[in-house]
Image (cartoon, rainbow, N blue to C red):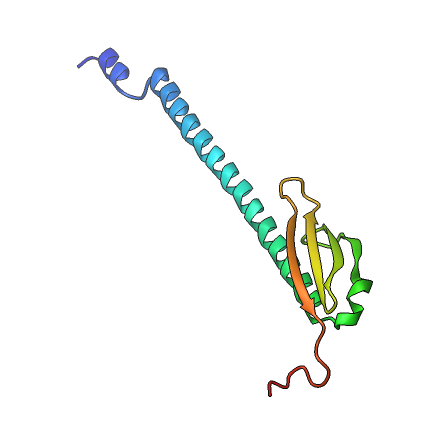
Length: 134
């Protein structure tokens, strides 16, 4: 073999380098898109879990308040603390003589998640010990 033949066969051509870069670009672009979509879904799931936790916490608080102090809890309040800034609105209505309906709405500050609502019906306890089952 001659020296000219050896030089032509060794190494890679510019066309092969360009094809390898194009394949790598397509693969990295797809991976970036997948990573971005996964991150967006993760943020949405995190917001939903924080919203459910805030709703459960407030519903639990309203469930244990004395029946006669419920009307003082009506109104809206902004909660700006991390990790879940939101607006909490409580409305209380009398359903019957001894029954009150508590409606709780949690509206996130984030525009991607809608408000969540729950309703609790509270009844006035009978006289005496409410834990006495006899």
